[in-house]
Amino acid sequence: MLNLSGLIGKSLVEPEDFSLDEMESLFQLSEKIEKEEKYLRESCRGKLLAALFFEPSTRTRLSFEAAMLRLGGSCLGFAEPGSSSAVKGESLADTIRMASGYADIIVMRNPKEGAALLASRFSTVPVINAGDGGHHHPTQTLTDLLTIKRLIGKIENITVGFCGDLKFGRTVHSLSKALSRYRNIRMVFISPAELVLPEYIKNILKNKNIDFIENENMEKLMPELDVLYMTRVQKERFFNEDDYIRLKDTYVLNSEKISAGRENLIVLHPLPRVNEISVEIDSDPRAAYFKQAKYGMYVRMALLASILGVEQETLC
Image (cartoon, rainbow, N blue to C red; front, side, top):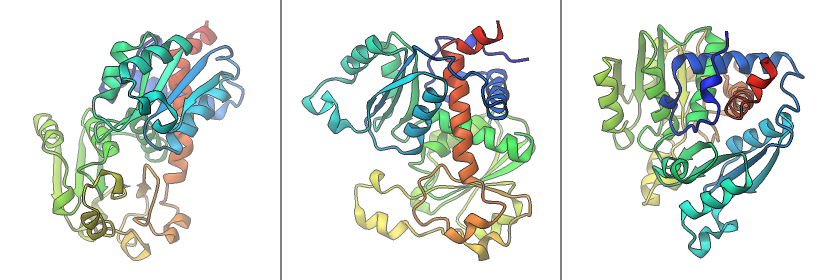
């Protein structure tokens, strides 16, 4: 039984804004949309999505736009701050006030942590956080959890390894916090010393008695993993280019390294990939990152339909 009525008109700033039951219902609805091609098509006709991207994006922006268009709605917005009045000094609050007067729902990415929460307080329509600095990326987290559920069959009693930039990676921060809500989750954090997980995330995991370890050796830990979540070292987060160059190739997943992994391992990546996953891995059946990207569109369709209330109207 789908339990989505509580999402109508609700903003999504971080994954904890939704209950586990609501997320499970979103996953069920995502699967229904995927399997039944015409389900919810045209349900958002007359609805308008404002996509406000103050930071570059490919997958998140396009998947939200594709999701809204597949639901029959329309989109407006901008793909970079240079094409908005932010370059003239307009405050985020004023941009949000203006956009919420035009649209039925706002999706926003911003390089500043806390920007999504601020936007939700000034908007008269629901706001979905598409990434705020190194803080949260809740719709990527929904995508990641859906992918794990679809390919492994469960989101509990598993070991998830995170590898790469764990310091600045908002997808890592969001997903690790979300996974901590499930039973018998073990996490392995693999990174160079300069890019370890922030203390506030580790404190959250400790307070929930989550079993986790930190290590720099990918090969040693590979056999223990059910999920390997690779991330790129993010050049845009570094103040010193020399540090970026020194660290960017610390971990590269190739055929030799993945050979130590289990046969049923799944390899995820929020994308974009730079060179941390060799292209030779793409043909390995354990590579799931392009499936992951497609699942992202379905879960965003489910999310938009639920927040806008059209899914409940269809059920009625």
